[in-house]
Image (cartoon, rainbow, N blue to C red; front, side, top):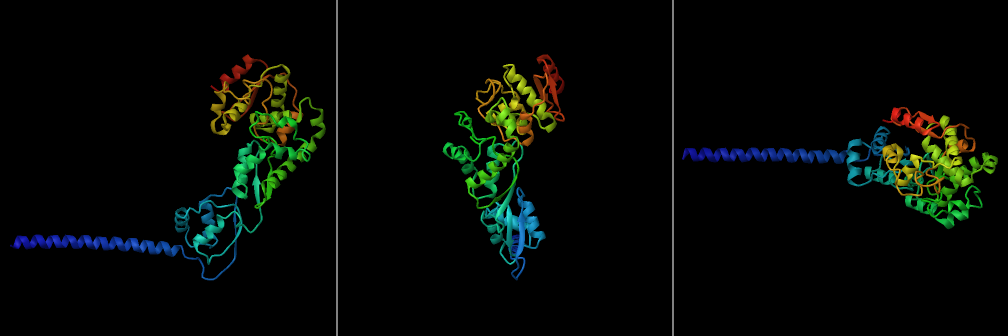
Length: 360
């Protein structure tokens, strides 16, 4: 009998211990939840207007850190959990009027609203070499116009034709059946201020206005060139991609002119990048190993220039094709594994020697 009582006593003690542990765990969980919810309460009891700016491309972590530093929210870690659970992470760039007396969710609902910014413009920078899809994506991130809406408009023949009277650099040659995006090459890389509620036409015209300034700057040289305006923008786009440094652009442009004059194919690997829709900076080797890829943009297969620009060139590249440097070179290659230095050659044998030396 004593042994049976001892067993029962031990069993009861064990159950009690388990219950105590469960109670402690439950207390910790409830305490944690209580503490978490407390961190989501307004940072201030009284209303106060705080101007808060979200920069283009700023990460969620940085935005939350800035909110915490400015006293708009109590806790960065709690806010981060909350907004991820609520799927309020699509923060728009702009300047906002926020109030620390608001709940965290309310603050982030404003930051996720494309019309929530109190300053009506947003600044965007398009860099030399951006494809139309990159530019459209940047626009879609900060204005009411989506990426797909912009690309559809830029590829709408009737719309592009309506622009031609205002922008003389847009010519009939643009309407090539093989063109991927009709306005590719004409979206000038620059820093722009757009109204956040601007429509797609207003945004497009603001970009083309900048292209027009550059076109007018070189109007006489465009008129005197042996190539058409569309061909010049196309060649400038290739030069932009092939020569990373402005100091190389005029000489690279001269090489392409020499090849065209000699009836040689341009054989530019960067046109393969566009053909296979692979960006050189992400996968340059894919551009080098696909010379047989079937595309009207692939200058290893087609004679002369592709049907249109492969990207949006900047002023230096446009100037380079209008003022090419004269030389006897027919080949060049960039040391993509090193510092990007461009090496030139007059013969294929010299070119192959450069390839073996710098790319093998």
